[in-house]
Image (cartoon, rainbow, N blue to C red; front, side, top):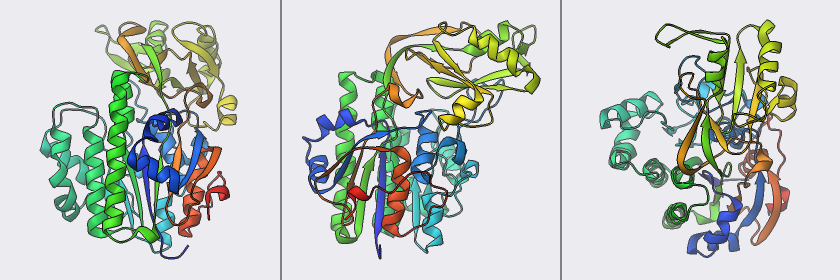
Length: 423
């Protein structure tokens, strides 16, 4: 559609149940009344942030877009580097499609968008080690594509949010105000923004904890700031604003480290001090499931049978074969997947105890999508029907729908256009 602008805001871990609280708030009530609500959006497997956001940007399953986890698989490293950079994508995304159409583009805090060649304005998702200095943050953001000019305009003025004493929402406020600065200064045609106050709060306090509701108020404020900016810029009649999310969360009580089992049974080799030296099999966490990599294909049957014998123990509910995971859209370079029983998050540690308890239930995700709360989407603006309720859709349906609004081509997309919500 001609001369349209689109702002896609992902409120990470916002579930359809959370709307019961937010629908009484001014800004969410406004877009619910005057926009279209896709109440339950069925997530992908795994219900993990980076794979889900890749689906939200491409309309593809994990098997097709290639983003299989939040972090790179590095045997021997319990906390490997996060997937900051866009070069892991195997499918065309909205940013590239928009650039091909001659539109201006911005990606702020969106997972795995670092150094995207088709993003005009990038403030990347810089996850991983906490307690960085200001200089380290500047280094990392610029390494991921923030130009000196952009950093001076929007990064530096908002860096103080990332340097505050530890709080679940620090990164979200940084992302939101960087995005608002870009919107006001450059008015890109397509902007994708990732804000995770809900996800961060649920991870810390629990998926159903009363204190986690404070993060919903933050979503209300952030949404209001975007609506106000669009109004003040005088672009309401050409700008669509999408409030969406990637997954829900459920409470867990333990971390399970199946690499400890592999080390105890000779599949991971260590020296006399217990330090990693080599591997035959390695489990790489995807939250509440974990990917099992086997170096030598000849060892796959033995490793598979080993873990089959662990079903019902250590939080392992089921072992999915490569063929089974591909049918679930979760194909990748791993040999098979361990699905958790809903009480554990899988870790990468290969030393110490297999099971570690949390002091209180904490929220997590990465499970089969039917196990937990579904995410949700509200589409508001000149291209969406007011007051329409679509009961359900798939996570992959978002990207082709937003592409149609902007007149873009996403040939790799496996989702459908949600015609029901379009004018």
